[in-house]
Image (cartoon, rainbow, N blue to C red; front, side, top):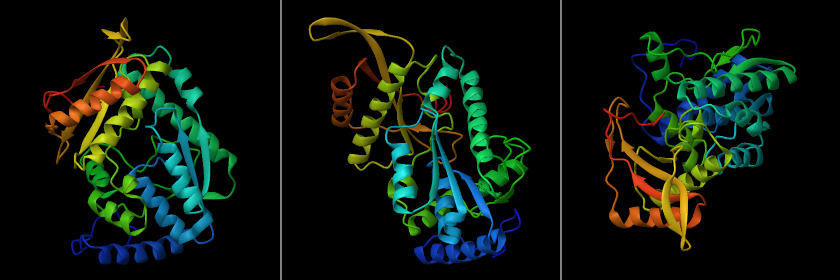
Length: 327
């Protein structure tokens, strides 16, 4: 298969079986070895499906000629950075640069309430951190990216641009390595499964680039962010334990307080809002009906285990009129 173009061949077979995924992996590995030779590849590894599959493919193809950079901006979900380190560094032996930039990001975001301003700060700061780490490395001439075929289609249609990592500085002059750019998301997941990535990574639900930064509504504070992270973990744990297949499920914690009673005393704490939606095209989304027993269990755990939250609500708003994310 020719991986040099941006057009999916008309006769390209969709990857729907493990055997077809294995065949793709073999061809992709050979193509990357031919492209990279004895050079080095830099990859921004977020832990998302696309970048994780690209990392696993590159490790199989060129081993430690790959350098992964994982930036924890302090807005990751509970356990995500730890999973990235465990899977790629400890299990797969990748050369991984881990940057804990939590303080740097949260200091920049202090007092910023506007959602678009938060997104801009997070994106801009990520670019700076990644560029700084790239500048410390020598002999890097290739940049690995998790571009997938829908990105190319959207770019051609003018929906969004691709071939960038949030708009990297022009002085980072790399040749791109994009092994999954002709695949759709379901095919990427199939390849990831065959490469041995854990299900929690392969079937990871969509997660916004700014992370919990747009789910900690309003100006982010460290204590409210911590409460959001713990509540979100409980929501994910209980829905996963129930065996439910839901497209996206998470919670938000707004910058407001509600009156409650805790240990016989007035509590003036935050509400937590749970959101569970199903979507096929992302343009529309329907709210998933959760069983009453499951909702009560999630609510009970959040109220008992998460300091600072005294009220739990369930968002019944479909898209449209409400977007999937609150910010």
